[in-house]
Amino acid sequence: MPGVQEKDLSDWGAFECELLELRQEFGRSPSELLFRGQNDSKYLLTTTLERAGCERMRLKDYYQLVASQIRPAVETFTGVIWDVPQYSVELETSFYDRELFSLRKFPSVELYRYMVYLRHHGFPSPLLDWSYSPYVAAFFAFRDQTAEPNKRSIYVYCEAPKGFKGGAVGEPAMRPIGPYVRSHRRHFRQQSNYTICCAFGSDLGWYFYPHDPVFGSRDKQDFLWKFNLPSTERTKVLRLLNDYNLNAFSLFDSEEALLETMWLRERDLKVPDSL
Image 1 (cartoon, rainbow, N blue to C red):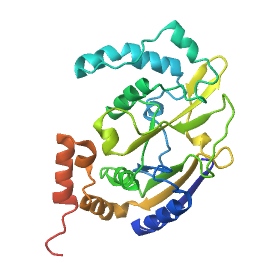
Image 2 (image 1 turned 45 degrees about the horizontal axis):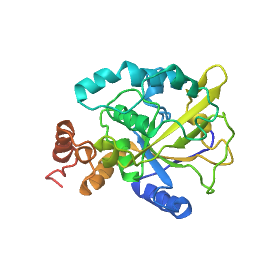
Image 3 (image 1 turned 120 degrees about the vertical axis):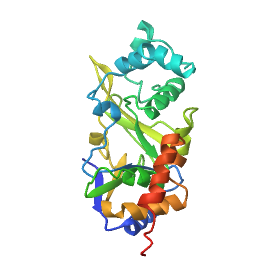
Image 4 (image 1 turned 60 degrees about the vertical axis):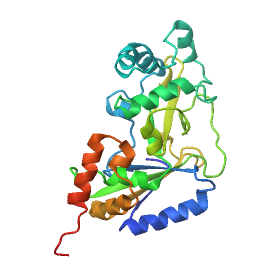
């Protein structure tokens, strides 16, 4: 993965030290850095759309799928009407506009709200989700106890480490879309933001593009750090986060998440009487 600084750390304390240094150098404001946790250091940074076998899907095809094909069922069962235009011949031409992505015309605010909703309910999405909180990212890295990887990863992303960003129209490019959008409550509970990565082809129009090749590809913009921590830190990290009421229930607010949190507190994190 180009443009990525990867480091193996011995424990959670070492990560805290790395985090402090990054914030001092690049954290000019709380929104400069984004964080993402993954429960296996071997996993790549892929969207759920890529994992569903739809890598490099055309934007127009995805739009038609979510705005026309599945939306009637979504609106029927949720009672929510989404203000997203139906797919049309006129709309189709916009997906062949070379400046669609560079001028931030996609996604529109209305479509973004809908895409965030779909993402939080498990529908395959081109959005790669991040958090403004390193501790939320740490929870997702260490939450899973069924997998047994040797290392878990916390990623730190900075869009413009030097304070500016360049690029050419039509080149593969990625960008954060923004945190402030009316959407699902989990979006705000998890302090979410999302990146989207696209490329342009004269025949295909705009299509979704993998994030990995774009990180650090132009003069260290879109820079990424990857910190690997041993899975043996899981109990320590989750106990620390739980002390601050950061757990599945506080992040998901569901009955299932409540029961997951109760099990964590009563079984995984409980100190044995013999100690």
